[in-house]
Amino acid sequence: MLKSFADVLLSGLRKRARAKSRARRGPAAAETAGGLGSTVETSGRGRQLLLLDDEEAILVPTAKYFRTLGWAVDVAREAEEGEALISHRHYDLAILDVRVTRFGGTGGLELLREIRRRDHGTGVIILSAYVSPAMEAEARALGAAAVLRKPQSLPELAHLALTVLEGQGGPRGVKE
Image (cartoon, rainbow, N blue to C red; front, side):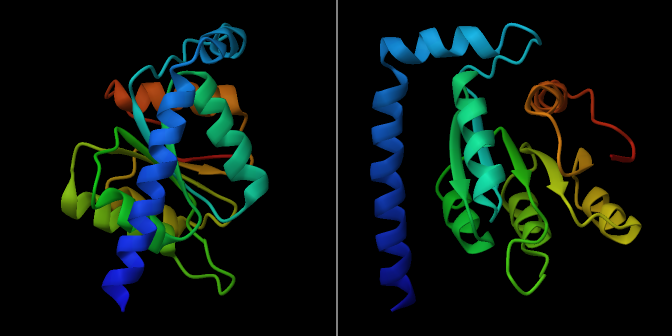
C-alpha cells in the first residue's frame, strides 16, 4: 500500500516537472527573468532548488520568484513529500521550513538529516518563524549553511542562495 502511494506521488511529480520544464523553455520565461534579477546577481540558471514549506503564502511566491531567476524549483508541503523528491533527484540547494505540520514537529530538520545522509553537496538554508538557539544549533550541526527567521525579502534570499552555492557560507547567526 505504501509503495503504491509513493509510486503514484512520484509519477505525478514527474509529470508536473516535465510540464514545468517545457513551460520554462518558452520565450516568455526568458522575458520574465530579465525583470526581477536585474538588481542583485541572483541568476540560478540550471540550478535545482527544493522548497519545503506548508504555508502557501510563502511557498508559492518564493517558488515563482526563483523560477523567474532561472532556477528549476520543486516544492514540498510535507517532509515526506520532500523525502520522495530527494530520493530521485539531486538538488543544488534546499530551503527548508522547520515546522511543516499542524502539530509543531520538526519535519524540516528531519528532511535536512535525510539530505545529509544521501548527499553532502546540497546547500541548505533553514527559513522558519520558529527559530530557537537550540534549533539553530541543531540545524548548524546537521550542516545548514544559514538559519533565517521568516519573513525574508526574496532578493536577499536569492542572493544568499548563490552565496551558499559558491561556498562562502551564510550568516553565522539568525538573521531577523
